Image 1 (cartoon, helix red, strand yellow):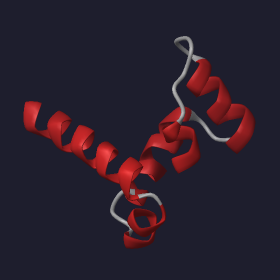
Image 2: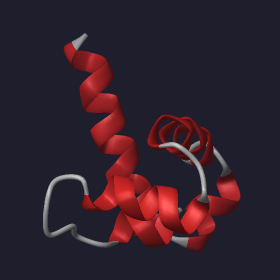
Image 3: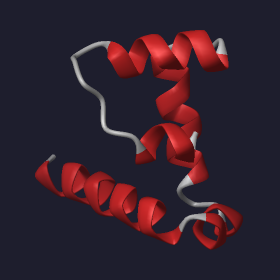
Image 4: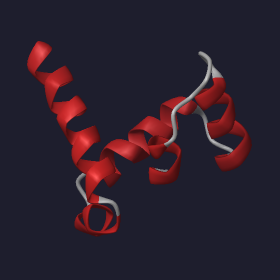
Length: 65
């Protein structure tokens, strides 16, 4: 999941298509699992740059609500 988040996507829908093809789950389920992963200390240890970037985006979205 973190590897998918590190990539940049060339067109709208490309990431969602990759989620379905590579992981075999819906994008909605992917984002649910990703959100839980961001709170996992082992994910932070594995890829701190990506996890911290995603946490900042998540926190900014929550603050706007």
